[in-house]
Length: 146
Ligand code: FES
Image (cartoon, rainbow, N blue to C red; front, side, top):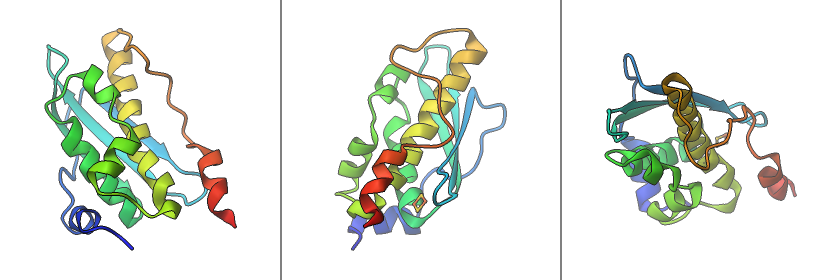
């Protein structure tokens, strides 16, 4: 049911942990499954993401997508990181089963929430970035209820 890449990132998640004095921290949750994701970003003065770590109380798909998402944003500018969607993360993992698609949103939302926190602290605006919500996309989940 899971691709090899998903299994690899689930069994050996990259960038797990926290960053002390992080430039931005974002925590998001999914109200339905109760899973929580926290993302830490270390961003340098050129707005490049120097380091990223995550912690989760989430399912295997949430772990794998977050792990892949951290790999994709590391070393990127904040504008580039804004373009990394959950779809891009899923593609990088060779896909997720449809019932697990919502799990990949936790990673995207957590990155956005951490970028939001960074922008607040710096007093800047990041183009295209909206204030994070704590509950993610209910409508995505309805699809899997039958
Ligand atoms: Fe909750 Fe996957 S089931 S994040």
